[in-house]
Amino acid sequence: MTRSDLIEQIQLKRSLLCVGLDSDIERIPDSLKKHDDAVFEFNKAIIDATHSHCVSFKINTAFYESRGVQGWQSLEKTIEYINENYPNHFTIADAKRGDIGNTADQYAKAFFEAMDFDAVTVAPYMGSDSILPFLKYSEKFTIVLGLTSNASASEFQLHGEHYPMYKEVLSKTARYAHAERLMYVVGATKAEALQEIRAILPDHFLLIPGVGAQGGSLEEVLNHGLIKDYGLLINSSRGIIFASEGDDFAIKAGEAAADLQKQMSTLLQKSF
Image 1 (cartoon, rainbow, N blue to C red):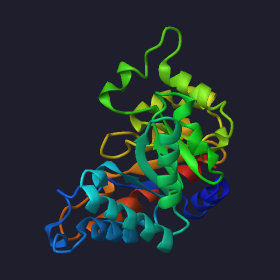
Image 2 (cartoon, rainbow, N blue to C red; image 1 turned 45 degrees about the vertical axis):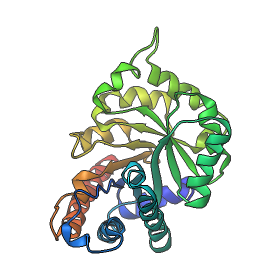
Image 3 (cartoon, rainbow, N blue to C red; image 1 turned 135 degrees about the horizontal axis):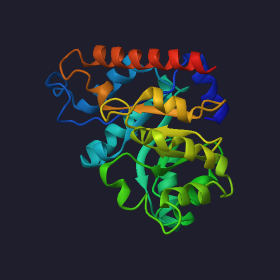
């Protein structure tokens, strides 16, 4: 998927919504556990219920890797289902990979070739060697962890002798060859920093987790982060997929996604 394709979907749906498939098998309804692949059945129902309200799906690979081979099968079936049935949706492997050289090449092949995701999240701590192998793919995107919303993020990200480390990451990576294929993770609970981040990254898309269950403000994110080409994907995971843990989970997920999309549409109308 190209940047233009993504922008077109945002315009058509008046939505910036990314639905996070953090599909914890401990929380899915017992009625699904009779299936050979309960997680895939859960994901399929969530995807079908939310696809008309969102432009993106993000699969947090930890919830699949933790289940070994069966988990990987669930992951592969999920991305295949999205690509076959909803090919206009931007797909993200939230894998947070952060290795170098041949290892990074193999991670890129895994997510971009074997599973055909549109994007993958990466950790920049090891420098350009951990990012550049992903940028070889012309119509794929690499999403760099920038300023995250977890409680201990300040231990490293906000430290630096003259300049917070996260700003150093943003400014240096934005100068890499093919940096137009980069996106960045910025937590919604850090909305007050978005103005400074936009001064460094005026044109890049930002993936914003933390709206909903983590308490981030949708309005603040749009006020500080929106650009003329939108430039935002706003993720909600638990607030949508676990809006209900009963047999009505898919209905409630669809309603939660529709509510967020409606809020986004209203705010976008005010902005454009």
